[in-house]
Image (tube, rainbow, N blue to C red; front, top):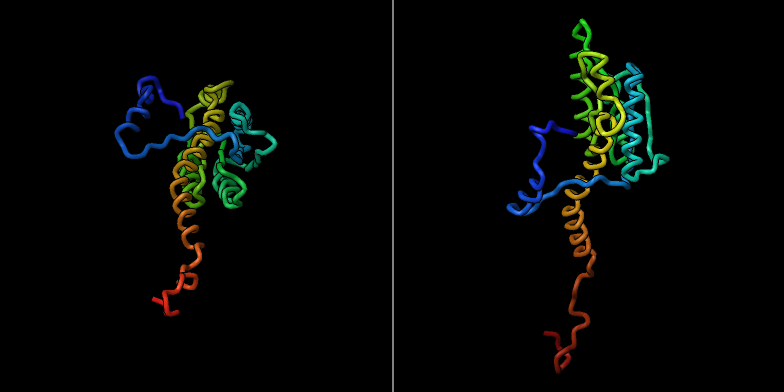
Length: 207
């Protein structure tokens, strides 16, 4: 996700900290990622723009669009369930959730936005794959439209890039575990050693 100029990570910060610790990981966008995108039809004119941004980001980073799965749900409240179903199939490396919740005159905004965010986080923790919150939570339609424009400022674009970066990071974090498991498996598969092939000492007796 983007930051303001005042809060953005400074250039070279990651490399600087990497020199002072034992191991450092920062995900690079994974062009081979299998991505699913879930969009909410409520406030669909905004979601449509976010979807265009997300697909543009995937294409810009080398992900073939014919490998992308898109699912549509009635509203933002339904995004977590669809994300969970997609995440549990094992067919996707990340899920991007898109929608817009715009504040009105009732408490509807707090219930929908909060439960949507909490549900998507739960899906990520339960499935172990990145689930990116690309849902706008704004006070006005104008604010939502501003965040669903063209280019990198589009929050759908930003969410898709975040998903690819998290796929790369998860793979990097899992690599030591995979390497360790491979070494352990090789050790377990090594045939048990015996003295059957050892040369016998003089006199035919085994030592």
